[in-house]
Length: 373
Image 1 (cartoon, rainbow, N blue to C red):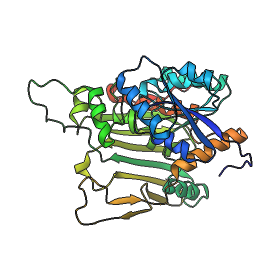
Image 2 (image 1 turned 180 degrees about the horizontal axis):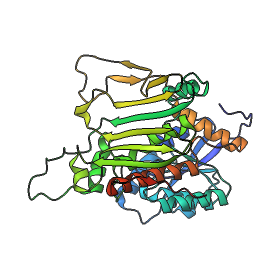
Image 3 (image 1 turned 120 degrees about the vertical axis):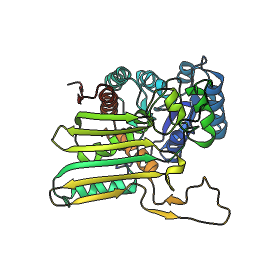
Image 4 (image 1 turned 90 degrees about the vertical axis):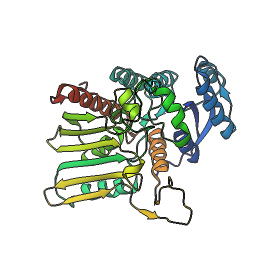
């Protein structure tokens, strides 16, 4: 919880809401934050404006199709960015240059050069940055407390499975001869209805780029170290959209960390037919005195009833305050000047790791992570 008694309410500008609004809604749910307006550039396509307007109407706040005008007409403390992935950093840089703190949806960017621009802008303007993550899930909190208490001794190895059981359109092999390849953006717009538009944007993104932040965020949290070397393989095993756009839906990564810890992770969007729940998401940690196996979804309850929709998850997470705790972490950073749980340099490092993994999968060689400094 926040360690400050300052009752100040921080005012937020929402820059783009092209997904489902979970990030700005999490901001609005915290009592120390208020959404004041939604803004975006006027030259965006109509579907961007439609989604921005729908969110603004739902929250009963104005939508301004001119970011500079919104900044001039309202008093903001922070920007909340949930645009297409390729626009995350540019919008964040503009917000930082206007003196605003920034909360950005994942991935930080699909380009490392954009992350470098953002890191420079955040630090030059002396503002705070939080990359949205899942590090405050109950299982992660307990795992970190257990490791930090020395219950398994010194940590020397870690593995994360992050298999996400959602579909991404037609299955691999379903496109008939002569049919045009699936257009990435059109598929993402179609996917909005069922919430599977995680890679929304013009540029195709594989699962390493879309979801890799989560398992890499877990590794960062539990080890307190950074990855130095990676070796990765990727495949397109499940979804035709990924085949047609030459991006992965399955990846396996081995790595060595700067302090000598070794590890691995598997990431994949494995399809709804492959798992009865949200997916197989587990963390294995080995120490000199013992080991841990952490199911990321726990605690959970299973719910079954007559005429239950086949697409409804039967296992439901409980005691999950991740979003509130992320916002509490952010408000504490604003109040006290402390670091956020995943700041701009952490986000830049994760993007560098993902880029190195993609390079390794193409070259078949180990790749060094080249972080600045």
